[in-house]
Amino acid sequence: MNIRQLRRGVALSTIGLLGTLALAACGSDAPSGDSGEAASAAEQQCQELLDASADAPDSGGDTFVFAASSDPAMLNPFFASDGETFRVARQIFEGLVGTQPCTADPAPLLATDWTGTEDGKSYTFTLRDDVTFHDGTEFNAEAVCSNFEYWVNQPKGPAQSEDVTYYWISLFKGFRDSETPSIYDSCEATSPTEVTINLTEPFAGFVPAMSLPAFAMQSPTAIEKYGQVADEEDPTTTQYALKYPTGTGPYKFVEWNRGENVRLTAFEDYWGDQPRTQNIVITTIEDTGAKRDALMNGDIDAFDLVAPGDIRTLEEAGVQIINRPAFNILYLGINQAQEPLDDLKVRQAIAHAINKEDVVNQTLPPGSEVAKEFVPPIVNGYSEDVQEYPYDPEKAKQLLAEAGAENLTLEFNYPVDISRPYMPSPVETFNVIRTQLEDVGIKVKPVGDQWTPDYLELIQGTENHGIHLLGWTGDYNDTDNFLGVFFGRESSEWGFDNPELFKALTEARQLPTVEEQQPKYEAINEQVMEFLPGVPIAHPVPSLAFAENIEGFYPSPVQDEPFTYVVVNE
Image (cartoon, rainbow, N blue to C red; front, side, top):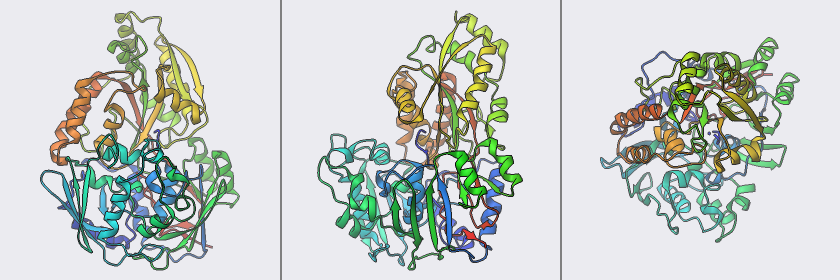
């Protein structure tokens, strides 16, 4: 999700899915996701929609039209890292592991259960025996091994660059023919329905990571026929990536009309419940206001990332607003490469100057929650004991005086043309925080930039920025997917070198079980908030809008949202 946005509830009947969850629990090292706190309003709504989806009638209409904010980058999910590509991929492809509905926790999908060795280096999956790919190729253990070998044997050139194979490099580090070795070692197909994946080092997050669309199972036959590339060739432009994506999911690919839409149709031999609506059209409408108008005019059936200011208007028009449970973080980043932001007292002053409650109430969707650290409460390793910086303007002024920074002027960077799940209205959020900083005597120099290509390049690729708005939507339930992404190494975004923190994150990631990781990550969260590289602001609730005749959809905190149960009532 960032910078990069971001499986689905298993396409079994809802009751059948819930009954299978215990099957994998004994073999999973995934975090529980149960924080012991009362469910949020979005989580309660999600559960109600999940329950209702099982009873939704057969669809009266044969086509569901969903408006996306952009085209997919291409159609091979292994080379993707953006939410719109993954939205399409989740209809076509499935992984060994899905997600438990309404949570970010792993659940059975193409694998019915799994076990891991005590050293965290091997995982054995039991596979479904009734699955075929859309081209008729059998799904089995050999197909799983073929996928892993395809991933690790990418040719040199673009296919081994982080902007093309982001998730493989982030999690599995390298390739078989690269300077950086991969932590993936081998795959053993011990029977048609049993496969073992061997790693060179412990990776406690391996099972939940398998829920990422980037690691969905693809037809070895189709990849061999349409998707092969040589050294220095671009794998995102193959015939497979543009015209022949082939998975095991409930929908199969029909056509992609660039700049307009992607068309899918139900896969008649799907192993799970047949989709209730035969055809899916995912149409591209970039402007949020245009999506709102298209829904109200009946041109589309649903869209994502509703602007907070549009919610009341849509509800008054009879539109259903569905809130996705928050699994994200909006933060104010602080670049310590710029003086005096390398002074802890200055960073503490900035934190005390911000009234997070006002930011949430004035600029974020209803149900959004104030954040006190850089991970959501449901993530393993969340700590209740982190250092907090309550809104205290006088304390902020005192700290600035102690730091000799009473006349501080800061560049404040923010994007001007984008809406993200963690940052639905960046200009409004900027204005509220700017006012709060100015109230304690910090002069603000606004620097607004276009999201693409300027903003991220400036923040992540240079040191020429001061404080900035950014965030992250979690990909799966693993602390490293938040803290490691932000603070695992030196970066231009944060501008600091903290070997102690980097080492702690590396060591925690390599522990073999979540149980061993939890106290380590709790301590790291506490360490981060004492060091204060930035100010966590909120966990915004992303909102989706659906026409009143649509039933059967339920949201996912990690956007694992197939349209299998969606019903279009006439």
